[in-house]
Length: 112
Image 1 (cartoon, rainbow, N blue to C red):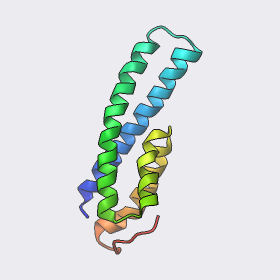
Image 2 (cartoon, helix red, strand yellow; image 1 turned 60 degrees about the vertical axis):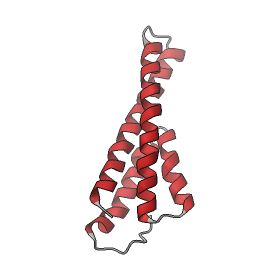
Image 3 (cartoon, one colour; image 1 turned 90 degrees about the vertical axis):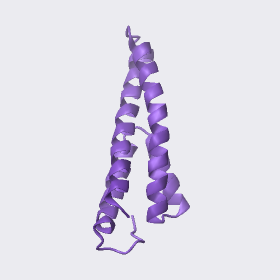
Image 4 (cartoon, rainbow, N blue to C red; image 1 turned 135 degrees about the vertical axis):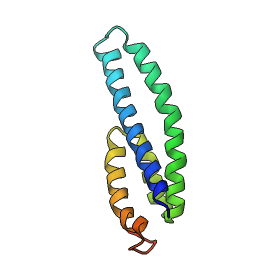
């Protein structure tokens, strides 16, 4: 497995996680605090997160197929982009497990 596969997954995990947190803060500002401009901010961030989440799904699926993950683990990683802050924790765990495999020092079936 190439390092670029892991790198692009990591980038999209961070982008998706940051946008999801921004979306949650925008929703709080819009509905709980009733701030001016929060509706526009929320609309822009929700569209960006939606499209970039699709890219995250593609990269995570590509990573999972190349790492030969079981279906449950694959779903766990795919859904991490829908729970605020989960993408950061899942990305860290996946990266630690796959760093050795990318370096070529561990067999393909790494446990996470």
